Image (cartoon, rainbow over all chains, first blue to last red; front, side, top):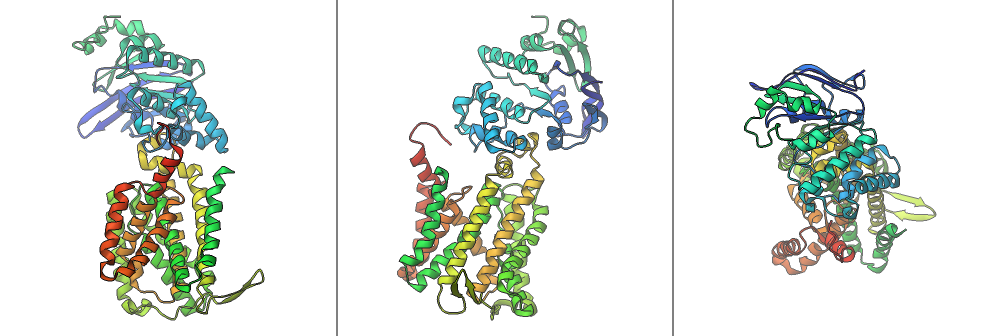
Length: 243
Length: 320
């Protein structure tokens, strides 16, 4: 059985078809790259999976359960976490408290929740900034906090939305290692990214969207040489022909 | 243990106050401070922690007062039970107002709730057969004469002391309830909702449930202290649904420090006493009151408690 099954998903916004008949599935333990030009519907798809949007057509099935139309907090409780493209920290709370919001849901003992939160911060290299006000963090740290928050609710499936945008090459390399480690620890991950090198190195399979439709799916190398994919990206400086 | 120190100081001071300041009128001021304390503390749950700037707080306070007073006058119900009735009246109103307000943010909450406040004020002014209108509802029974742990407490006489201790007791209980709530997972979820509701729900926070619980808690406490007020002052009028009361609550919250446990209490005591003290200046009273507030907020924009907190704890570069 597929871990996550997206079946013929369609999402329309007053005349604009953001998603049309998108179908693909993810097996437990995979890392799937989701790519496509700007505006192709990648974040919309994440919003549909995580319950922020309800699709007009199609179904989303997760771990055997139909989660179509469920509210975001319910989907989170089913084990799907997502990050936001522009990080949304709880600005007036300390970094530690940001993560506590999630760990307090599952750990009834406040001390245990705090321990788990600190563990997560350590994992992401934010432990030394645990008492910092979240609004004082720089971009790279905000992105890390975003991941920490997503992990705090013990997800089985993680949706990462452009977590590497705006990072330096060394920060990108660090993030790639983090994603690999999370996957090794058993997390199934879907990654939206524009940085092709990163996608190619971490993804087991890649799904390509263009204008709300799925135009290709397969192994990274296959997708990279797919003519329709190259055509969709013509003009984009990260042309897929460059590895 | 360290965390309990503010509590010990708090309770110690409350017990000490009337023993040091024996004047009956001063004790009345302390009692009023306790009443404001509960009002600001409860408002802060919704406004400070929840980010929902409700202007409807006097609704719960006033409904609690009238509910308990009317029950006592018309049905002979004991004021002690009236406290609970007042709390329930507030709670029911809170539950009803919560629904339209649930989806609103920031200033819109203020607009909708102030409308409700004005409506309730008008109804209480005009429904003379029930509330006696602007003349006010008088003849409200006080808490009577009771014996507790061997102590004889006479609420019927002119001595304000028993009233003070009851108000202080209610304040301590309310503070304990507030503290338990804000340290619970729902409390931290409320803060998250305040800062970024979408991010909160993406993490599994049931924001509707959290907001409703915050509303119910806030309105119950306000209703409870409203009932107390009725059986203390023994005369209530539609003025309890006053916009000026709301402004006072807001000012006390700002001054003391929003989204804290003791900030509202400090703000309540401070402003009540400053306001009383300024009576000495006769006609200049309101003018000086305004100046005081402007100066205080300018130098301590986050309130007194956070200002002291920062100075005491953060000698280093850490923020937050």
